[in-house]
Image (cartoon, rainbow, N blue to C red; front, side, top):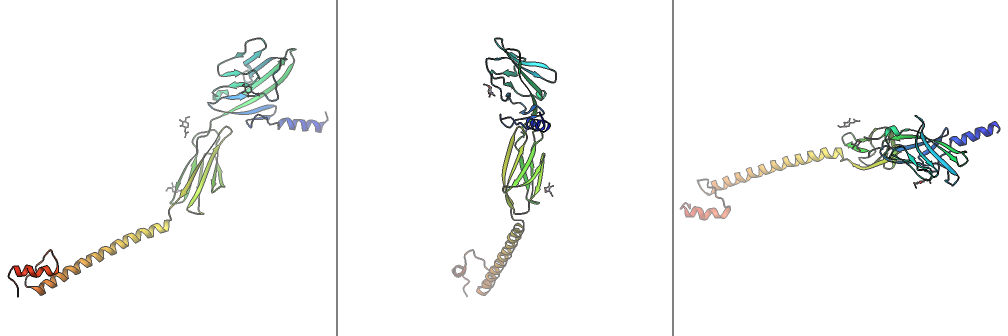
Amino acid sequence: MSLPCKIVTSFLLIFNVSSKGAVSKEIRNAFETWGALGQDIDLDIPSFQMSDDIDDIKWEKTSDKKKIAQFRKEKETFEEKDAYKLFKNGTLKIKHLKIHDQDSYKVSIYDTKGKNVLEKTFDLKIQERVSEPKISWTCINTTLTCEVMNGTDPELNLYQDGKHVKLSQRVITHKWTTSLSAKFKCTAGNKVSKESRMETVSCPEKGLDIYLIIGICGGGSLLMVFVALLVFYITKRKKQRSRRNGKLPLFCPTAGPSKIPMKQLMGMTP
Ligand SMILES: *[C@@H]1O[C@H](CO)[C@@H](O)[C@H](O)[C@H]1NC(C)=O
Ligand SMILES: *[C@@H]1O[C@H](CO)[C@@H](O)[C@H](O)[C@H]1NC(C)=O
Ligand SMILES: *[C@@H]1O[C@H](CO)[C@@H](O)[C@H](O)[C@H]1NC(C)=O
């Protein structure tokens, strides 16, 4: 093989992305695979077809070179513990992933003649899933905060009315000025999960609010002054009228004409 050809081949090997979803990516001859803490993962062997010629499929953890599962023709399948499940097609399932499952896993396959058919390594990386991001805001300074509590290496993205405004790790603080109301979307994600939250933020017009309060207070005071003046004026008029009508200032609950029959009754007609 010529040198340029070798370079191209190794380049192709490095960038050979597994066809089985986006979780596996081959880096330096190992498949980088991401698993979520507490969930199951299938380590699928790419481009492998089970056949009668296959005699031995062996999985081992490369850190301690310990055999964890093995299929032998006409023998009982070996699984080191309940957390491992080896399928007929060679796929290894690891159940309920824990932090210490983060390791390299190697599968070796031999045919009935003892020939090594395939050897692959999987770099299993484990992350905690992100939690749903939380959005809060303050109208006084039109500042919005988006925060994610849980998750390994989260990436936060904030969008305002569909436009990307900020990128951060765990917390985003954003001051918006364009208008008092806006639609915000905050997404949190890592290799194993993605969560998002939407909020429509609506703040009252600040200036208008103060004028409204002043208006209500001012109007109320004016009304009180007006009512007080009115009461004072009516009282004064009543006093004047009763003085004109008789010597004694008689206050009667009923108004106007009823005063006369009352005074006649008391024998005070002039
Ligand atoms: C192997 O078998 C398991 C269980 O039947 C299945 O979930 C998985 O997708 C299979 N993998 C491949 C690569 O066919
Ligand atoms: C974060 O994780 C802890 C422990 O796993 C859990 O109790 C808590 O409810 C999670 N918080 C959120 C916001 O999901
Ligand atoms: C906005 O106001 C809130 C509450 O008064 C305060 O906690 C926050 O620090 C303020 N943010 C900025 C950027 O001034």
